[in-house]
Amino acid sequence: DAPCVPCSNPKPSLSSYTSPGPVCTWECDAGYLYDATLNTCLPPQAAAILVEAERLETAETPGSLPASFTIKLSLKPTSKVEIALNSFSQLQPTTPTTLIFTPENWDSPQRVVVSAVDDDTA
Image (cartoon, rainbow, N blue to C red; front, side):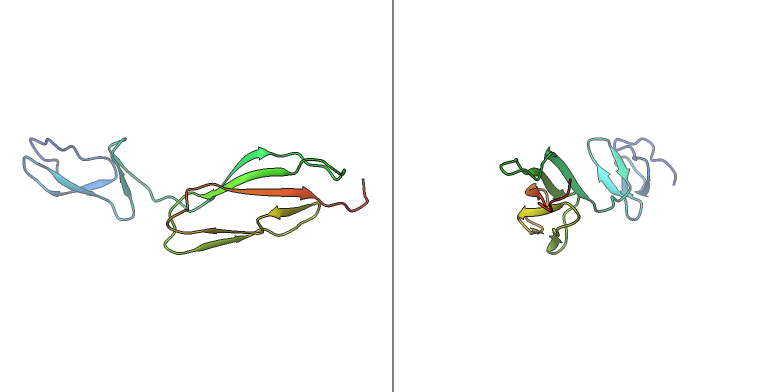
């Protein structure tokens, strides 16, 4: 991995030169992605579900406001991703019950609303 001399295109970290000369060419190491802002190669990210709170309090009492949050994906999927929202313990989703993310809408937050389950317990 000898540096190019002179080099008008410096090699970022986690990359390898592919040809020497006045205009150095390089490529990120396998699996790494180039970030032009940082001028470096970054390791691949793991896919994640990103949740942002809007309102996290709700109660069983009639007329109480539901809780809500948004969900989006951290990476663009190659195909449709479905997330089923199921009732559990003291909460149940009111809208929607399934989120669908596609390569076109993966980074658009989808709002989820949940209400407390009225179970006659304190």
